Length: 183
Image (cartoon, rainbow, N blue to C red; front, side):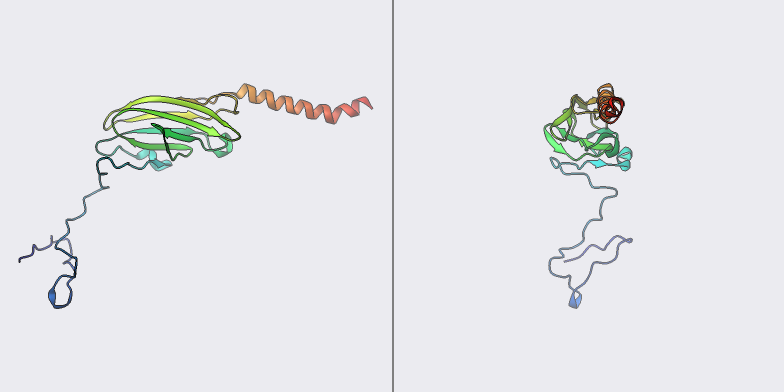
């Protein structure tokens, strides 16, 4: 039996005692492909969150959704939950890259504290090689829906939030200053 010599840039395979190949080393392994391996058909492709997500390109046979969850933990509270086609997927504030098979997809996002709030959804058509932008903004309070679209979104409910804070400050002032004015 003859063996094929390795390519010049690869070292010879390890040899066992007496010049024989070790048990289970059934010959040469092909060199690894350049770049990241393509996912097998039907196997999910993992999403990427954070600054590196903005630089991602869809893998072969896929398109992608670049969903930006606007805000951060300090300004928006709890991290929103993302579902694509009814399946939960990881998400973080900032850009989130979701490789998707070509076709129609539904994206649902919400936040939960004492109850589920900030619900928003959109349907989109993905084509192979295409990255579709999406933006979601958490509302200022939990008594309204979130905002979602293909362009940067504004947060809903600022007027109500200012009214709630102003009312709370007014009550505190009446409780503090009221007795002094009456006495």
